[in-house]
Length: 408
Image (tube, rainbow, N blue to C red; front, side, top):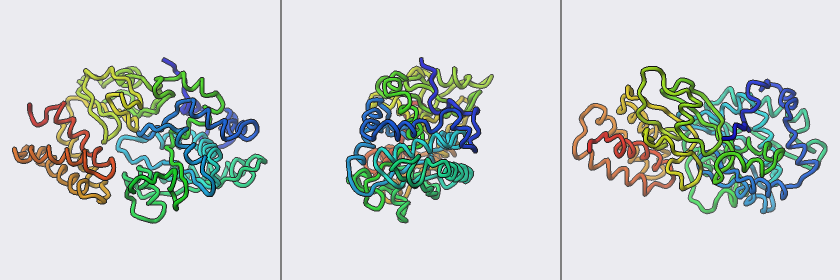
């Protein structure tokens, strides 16, 4: 399996506070190459050919998404989604902490490719330190003519602005994010129209995750063929995985797509601490599926055929000393708090789910609760306005089916 590192290659080697440090290792070379030797259509074709797909969880083709906005005339916008509110997920924050300029270069390139003159970084409301890092990076990039009017002496102009959200989980969904930026409640909109056709202030808008964007400079410098040879053919490239829970070496690691869960836990994470017995792992944060030991050899990809949704890439390892009822109460409490309240099924469903989880923890769950639980899970899975309701039901559903928390 390839050990190529695309995003983390220079972590620990450069000073994230100094643009000169990034330039010294080839930083902004992709932007220079684009301006001097390439055009938007050529680069778009290369990104499509690479097979790069969204790293925020949905896995939509990045090239197709950029193309949908690039083909439209008039005013348009690019938004980098750095909201990252999934519990156990901090990969995008780690990019900013270790190499903010690779993210910024990706944002600039994405904006120029679609023909946008204005871009935004929508950042999690709790990421105060990262906001300061990005503000410094923007100032340095402008001084070096990588931003502003006439980028590197070209006809390209671009302004990048940071927009700080209030920390709402639902604003990770692109239409809720846009609602928030427009001064409205952070809640999802009905689609279509999609943001690529009518997004921020009714203009064509491309919203891409921070990790996704950070891959683009590498693709421009090394080519689509090189990128497509890394990882799984169905969703090429590398992925940032966040290892946490009962594991020897927690943290963010970069590995090719197609890697198995077992390899991540035991090769990259060093396995469980001495004396701890593996029980299950949760993939993708609080919204993710539970995976038993018999399923650890599952390759992780963004393909819909993959039995385990990769999501944000968070890998929570749980050993048998953990109180599962405490964990369930934590999951359900998170979604109860984060439901935007737009639709009845999610607003009431997440509340009732947490209520029953509390009785489950206290050992007071009744047969009526068990029947209600089935109805609530079905309702959340099938009737909510946006995916948040489905996410709220995932872990509880798996705990019932796989961990037999209600018995056989």
